[in-house]
Image (cartoon, rainbow over all chains, first blue to last red; front, side):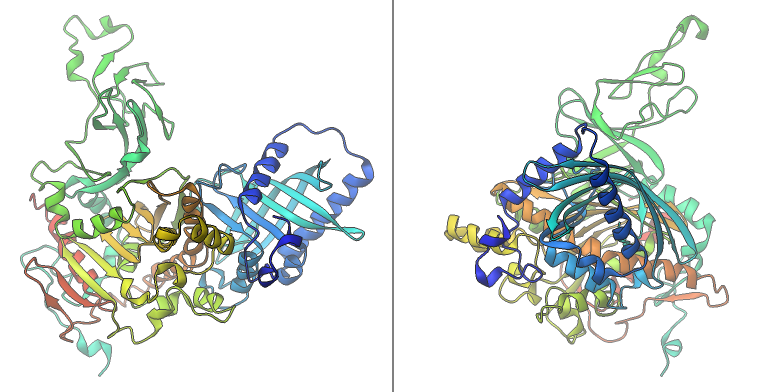
Amino acid sequence: MSTSSIPAQYADTSSFSYHVDAAFYDRLDHYRDSFGEDWPSPEAATLAQATAFLVREARLVDEGRFNDWLDLFTDDCLYWVPVTSGGGEPRTEVSHAFDDRRRLTDRVYWLRTGLAYSQIPASRTVRIVGNVEVLEDAGGDTLVRSNFIISEFRAGVTKTYSGWYGHVLTRDGDGWKIRLKQANLLDSEQYHENLTIVF
Amino acid sequence: MTIGETVSDVALTDLSRWNDRVLEDRVHRTLYTDPAVFEEEIVKVFGGQSWVYLAHESQLPKPHSYLSVRMGQRPLLLTRDRNGALHGIFNRCSHRGATICRDEAGVAKSFQCPYHGWTFRNTGELVGAPWPEGYGMDFDKSQFGLRKVNRIETYRGFIFGTLNEGAPSVPDWLGPATTWLDYWIDRAPNGEVFVRSAAYRMGYRGNWKLAYDNAGDGYHPSFSHRSLLEMASRMGESKDMSYFGRTPDDGPMRSYSLGNGHSVIDQRSAHEGGFWVNQRPQPGRERFEEEIRATYPERADELLDLCVGAQINLSIFPNLLIIGNQIQVIEPLAVNRTQLTWHATSIGGVPEEVNTVRMRTQEDFPAFGEPDDQANFEEVQRGLDVVEEEWILMNRGLGTGWQSAAEDGVVSTAVTDELHMRSYYAEWIKRMDGAQA
């Protein structure tokens, strides 16, 4: 369902989730399939703009500016960290994160309560985003695929996560907003300690 | 009176070599920190003497399915033969010890060891070894099958194994816990529960017993889960689990010690108005509820409640924790490292969209609740490095008169009682002392 057709009482997607319906899941199937295809070479300007967007987003997360990061997302967004790398089947499988706007707002709120013992002390992270590819989607959105390496330090332990992102970006004035951010960990279904950072 | 004055020197079980380390009201830190204790319990408590949970039958869906699991630290293959019967064969070549199967799950009638090519049926018999003449004329293949788990038994889909020939049958060993397992299974309209999602494999740097201590602990939620409770009040409503903060000692929730180390916390009474209305909101909740009420008006409340956890925490000693709708398995890796594997469950007899929202519900606590618990487990492990402070207390509720015993031996008490710890340590001692029955 598009956000324009949400009944008025459910319009605030940070409080209500009326729009996550069968069509929402069908759209994830489409994105998953598209991310798995070979893409033609993009225009240099689009590639540069997409890369700059990802780098800026990465910096907001690494600096713990989660409210600013949340502002990057659309009302009908999904922040998705599947347990089955690449997406699997979200209708029958759980994800590390399957955050619509409400749950993503919850997640940021949770991180900032100062009471989440899994983040006391807070994780320090730094990430590299690379191998960026861009595809204009039929619906007018822009699909971006990239690889990441994240180094995390917390409570005396340094850990490394790697994998690939799939972003779906939608036009917002001169820039973009994130409609979908899918983080696929190389070892998503394997042993992990304290998987509470934002990927 | 300080806590220190309430402790006693009474051994939890007499005539045990653990008399000096497990007292009625406290347990010695070394049971969480000593590698020698771990080396012994991982063999005895995890399969050598005790039944242990291995897997759910739905993870082996058809003839010749196999699943790689651990029995303690022993690598084990659970297999179905062509008739569907279950076998537990150790993933250890009878020749030189290599694992014969390195995949997590699949379908296979036989396994060939990648090292020297010995080939075994999925029931464990040796089919053949390359160039057998090298073993002389009297090579008897029947003597070189894979070692098998002596006893594999199931209870309504739950597969358990033990090497102890003298152990009671699984239903007898579960005892009164079967009533609670039945409740959990029979929430599904046709009693069909299945595991088909990829699992969360969470890990923490602490002893496995910290997870077992916690699963039956109704004292910790209002503190350990403060971030979750705070988050849940973001929209002005207090939701699931906030009730733990209200008069927990004398509230309506109860904890039951079920014998053989098993226990359960019953939170159902705290859910006035049904499970669904008390659940923190899941993605898609509002539209889903509207559609369910429109399409299935007669059973809408039932279907909505089935998207939400069973509101019991059932602990089956030593390694099976039923939490909400999830099957959680404790997998000890070292004295100070533990894997907690969370299997989300789906159910039969409901429209598929119920299972989808059930997935979304089962993502909530693992993301915003469990990590804080595990952070506390790790900080317990760190705190236990103060070797001079020797004891971990489990005396809450002792001497209060809270407990009442029923005819079947089940002891009922407040959810904040640490009776569940005192109870399972009696079982732990029994297994460590080598009891057969």
